[in-house]
Length: 100
Image (cartoon, rainbow, N blue to C red; front, side, top):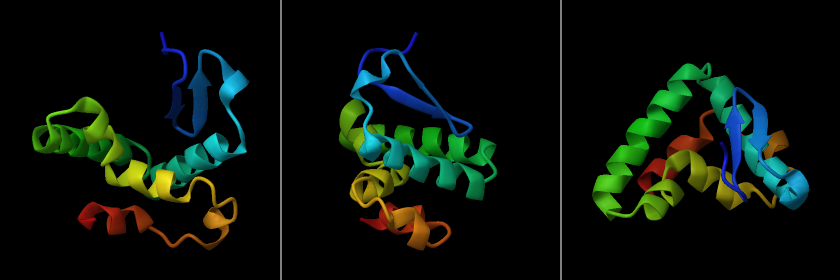
């Protein structure tokens, strides 16, 4: 069961318990994840996501900080309010958030 206030993107499909809080910016954030998933052919995205989360967890020793510092999340949070971001996004842009 998905907790309240959480949206999960699985293969480009959004899953949430209650969609009342989802606005255009959340949808844009999730569309950025869909673009990331597509360019990595889906399964590698999830493998990299989990590996990076584990690495960030060891680095930050906090689940939320680890999540917020995953390169995929950093790209999506940094550009979620820019509704034209996907029109100009370069392939593999999440790579640039690995270093920061």
